[in-house]
Length: 304
Ligand SMILES: Nc1ncnc2c1ncn2[C@@H]1O[C@H](COP(=O)(O)OP(=O)(O)O)[C@@H](O)[C@H]1O
Ligand SMILES: [Mg+2]
Image 1 (cartoon, rainbow, N blue to C red):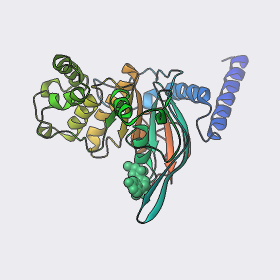
Image 2: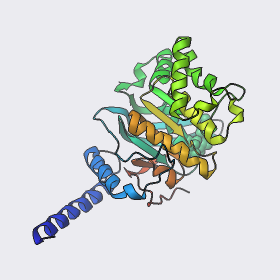
Image 3: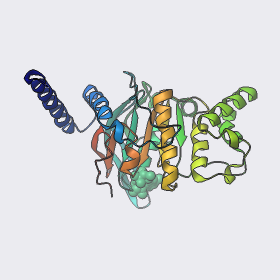
């Protein structure tokens, strides 16, 4: 390398280090441009160390296709529970945005408010104060009925305990949101078969949910979350009930949904190894965001 290119490389490294430092100082996600540059940079640096979780559905080599459109915006979000024991302030002023196509993980110790936040993002619950704009619309502008419709159409949920109907078949479970969404029978069946194929359970269509392993059940739950073709998939500790060997295969499907199908993914987890599948990690501690930046599986967030 000649002297000029050494100088250029060193300038470039200096600039990148500078960017990282600048980014580290940003608590909330205000500088998305820097964030995205770092995402892309980090991807190119760590491609060979990434987990190839599943031989057929391995992590895609290309990065996230993040768009300009903001799909989730929360501002000064507060959630307080009022009960017999008095009031519990669970979320104490949360600020962040998520752009279409992002893959975000939310980490934090037990009781830090992760599920509470997820329920608000999924419009299963409402904030005590603050703003939540989903796909550009303030949720306060929706009636109860409209909120239910929005939830069905825009958001897919994946839960820790899978929440499948144990005595129904794989196909019936996947079709279920289509019944609530009033999709005609034939169309519902075709869509469910396509989704079961996506999570590679084609040969299990007629098996009962209770006959499947935990990892397979969670794959059914992922397929079910996609029935109404939501733009956003929210997952609350989706690998929390799985043995390690089934964790990777489940996570590889989230990657696939993000990279190949452009879904915005927000996933809650305790584990840095799980967060490393995402591109950005938000750390929640005692109801406030303590970190928001590029995900890195080598960083061990103090979450316990
Ligand atoms: N419905 C509720 N009423 C009162 N307190 C609640 C309710 N739901 C959650 N909490 C409290 O809010 C805090 C955060 O809970 P949660 O969001 O489930 O945390 P995490 O998912 O991070 O473990 C906990 O202290 C919990 O006891
Ligand atoms: Mg929780």
